[in-house]
Length: 451
Image (tube, rainbow, N blue to C red; front, side, top):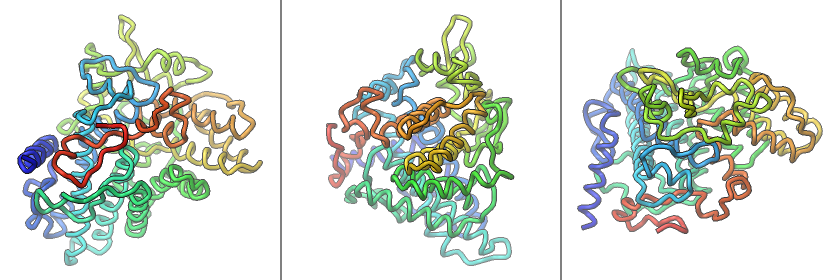
């Protein structure tokens, strides 16, 4: 029976991801890759497929990101999909289809990165496939794998770590979960590899060394290494020729713009490969389903000129007074998925400096905070002590990234989820391991507090 369940689940996972092809030939999540990556041309196709999977509907295309903002305190569930309401109410079940879909999508992306790392490393050089290109492809795969494991550990805690490509449907069975520290260590190891291999160029839709630096800043913030978080954030902030906070706030997404100076890393879409976010946010009048919407508390904050400033462009209302989020609005839905923005680097450095303490660091933190507030049309926050400044930064992150996957993870990593959300059961700070995964693999253990 377990074998039957495993095969059924594998086929289901593949069907979820079938529209985001790696190549037109094998592999998929559990199929051999002997015939795919054989030269520079097929390697380039594989790398494009990896990004396509990163941008898939169950990963950054909608579902993963939605968990990050639905679980916070800015969004209410307004649609018919009851599984979304579980995140808003913090009553997520192990049979939640979104939980299973995100798990499958992230591990599928990891598997694609693993194929690239193994196969591209063994390819011979050609006139059209230089060492520089080879290093770039490998660096991109290490970066994407680092991002995947970073997202996994944020969602589930320690997870199984797979560093070789899957060749058969049973290759990954029997691998126990690594610890949280071990999973984070893998993230850092992959980022170190990516940093060494990637070129120090500017590319907003593909990973470069600068992209790795930006993710390192986030990594060190989560790990409480304030000094290194400041160092890596500063590397991007100092590059004013290529990265800037655009004014006003809406300049990074309004008027159909893409890949602006605000973006360190975003994922692109096209009329034939659309971004599912729009459908969930826009109301029926605009061709969407409005499965979720900004709640009344957030609407009051973002439309308050002393708090939201010009970030009120994030929301709009229908003729009958129903509010909706307007970060994703394009038709067809070619809105980018924003992974790392300059505002995050400024607020990362602000928090890192504030947590280090001392007059100079606090002054620097205030400057970074004010840079974000100024572009939103706001004056000084009025914070003077370290605690006041940290709270001001937390509140600014809430407004700045309201419809991006930060708020929930911020409250968990800072230990503030109980005070802000009233969620005192810390076992709910991670998701349940999908029940289908537990049924097919005895080596997996459920997170405490879930069935």
